[in-house]
Image (tube, rainbow, N blue to C red; front, side):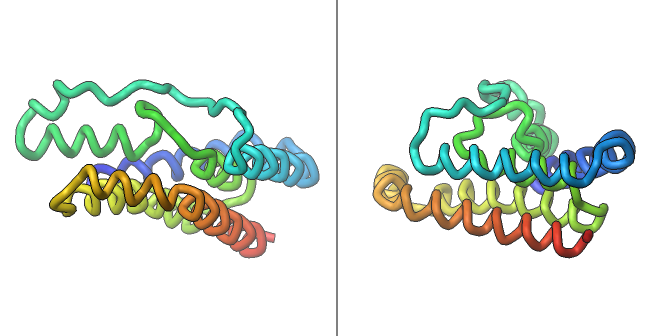
Length: 167
């Protein structure tokens, strides 16, 4: 639940930021060029180029889980769901966030945020449900290339959908 809340909150804030501060003042061509640049950088990073990601590269502190059986995991999930206090290994969320800032209306932003949170939750839940986590990790590592391509394709389809919906 926390992952969904964090993702939705971040996307809504990005949408409001874009609608209030950027879109009224920046020409559409510049916003489109910004999203295109981030898409090219994301593609290059997914292809293996060592492009650093803007991130707060640190783990959510473990003491948060100790705040109780409900409050601790919820706060932990919210912090991971925002993507602001955790490691990001893929540029795909950055690309989606830039597209939300540049183009999304509130419903599209909420869907994007919920999708980010759900994606993070599905990975965690599937690993947790595995009886052999080392084998799960090995299977993921063996399919990492396919997963990266699938994530990027999904992000590009989402971004094109956001663009077409709002133009």
